[in-house]
Image 1: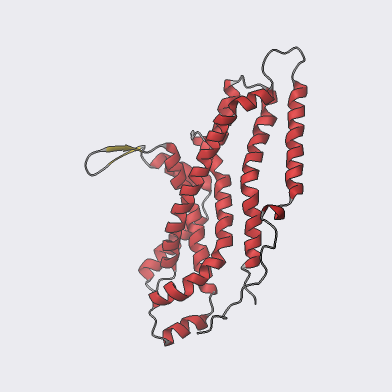
Image 2: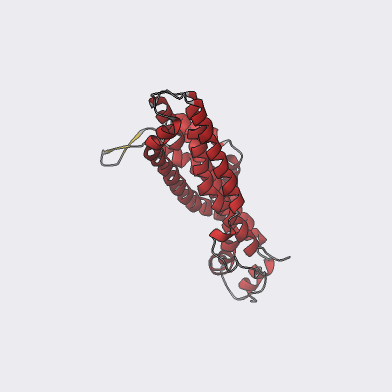
Length: 279
């Protein structure tokens, strides 16, 4: 069987480091916007005012906000790991030759792909109990962030299932026929021939869905999870909820997520070009 059934572009990332490929102009404009918000916040404070400024208040609460952002990242990592494992299993069931396996997998995939994330979040948060009892009678508490993480993994699981199904179907039929002529079973063909090729095709959309998942985690603040947005609101309220806090605090939060997500977006576009399949 020929290994040239499909061809990957030969272009690489280039000779420079990854940081050299990030468009510095975007970071410059974002930095200018943040600096402008600081100037605006300073202008709002009265000269003889004895209360702390918005900037000094933000610096004071910075560790608290970053702690919440750490929970956002933890939720995104765990949810993506669970969604990847469950999505691969669901995607393989979708291509099963047994209708009793294929149709339920198809239904679950399309149910969670076409449902609003916020509805899934509310459903899981209110239907899943806050505690569980193990077979030995031991009680285990389920924190809200664990339930929110599970809720976020469900729509991503469905999309990864569809990504895998599409990647498998994009492999030329001749490879299945060649493997069959060499007495490979269906499972051996999937494991040794088809799935290794699917990995390269699935990496860019997989990274896209991780970025979307990380951006969706602030929705958990609606239900009381103490992540970055919730901690930012709590910090402003504890400091007096002054109007001049709004722009510096929330712009800092925006910059925080941008600084984490934007390099992932750049890397994803480069991987898409690197692993583009020639016609």
